[in-house]
Image (cartoon, rainbow, N blue to C red; front, side):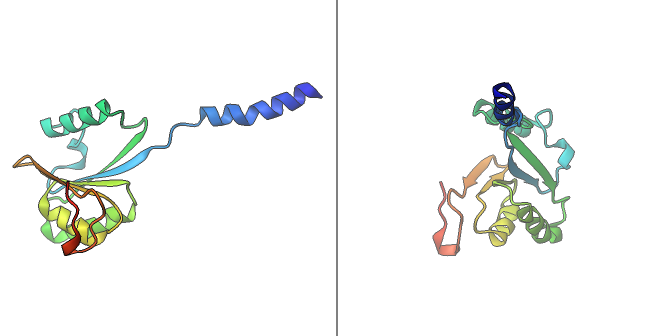
Length: 139
C-alpha cells in the first residue's frame, strides 16, 4: 500500500518536471521583408538580433516564440496587420519601421512596442505602454 501511495504521489511531480518551459511570444513585423527571411541565418540585422537575445538567455524554441509578419510593402495593409498582430497578444512587438510602429501604437495600449528603423539603424523603445500623444515614455 505504501509503495502504491509513493508511486502515485511521485507521478504528478515527475510530470511537472517534464513539461517544457512556457514560450514567451514576441511579434517581429517588417514592412517588406518576407517572414521566412527574418531568422538568425538571415540578414545581418536579424542575425545580430537573435544573437543578442541568445546572450540574454532567450532562445527561440526553448523559451521564446517569435511570430514573424510582413507588411509586404503595402502601406494600406498596415492598420489591418497591426490589429491582427495585436490580436495574437504577444508579450512584445518589434516593429521594424516607424510607420508600422505608429499603427501598433494606435492598435494597443497594453503591449510594449520596440520600433526599429532598419535603414537608419535607430531604435526607440516604448518602455511603458503609450496611452496618448502627451504620455509617451521613451527610453
